[in-house]
Image (tube, rainbow, N blue to C red; front, side, top):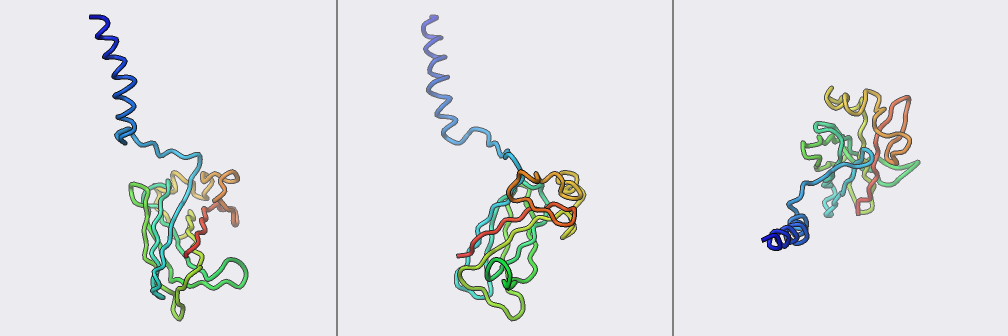
Length: 161
């Protein structure tokens, strides 16, 4: 009888449990060492539209400012109209960007996804987590965190093919 109990326990620990974990039924841990924003922008040739989707571990209802430029650095042109994307409860965001007046989208652009504590105005529940000046965004260790006038913000630059 003891032999059957040990064999059953062995089967449970070494056969059933690993298969259960591998099947995706295990709880998902979304912790990260710092706050992040990731995104992917798709341009399908429509000169007036770019679609963006992404994920973040910023609090739900955080507002992300999204801009598309023709290049990086001095002399670059802002091609998109003002776009703000809210972060959903599960950490995803999505936006369809339109062009600024007189501009057209094209291949090989740069999309900047920004989170700033003060612009656009964030909800109190968001500021309670990130800090009113962005002081909880992980500066200076977080590679996406920048500082401007005593305020910290997140910035993610992505290529729009």
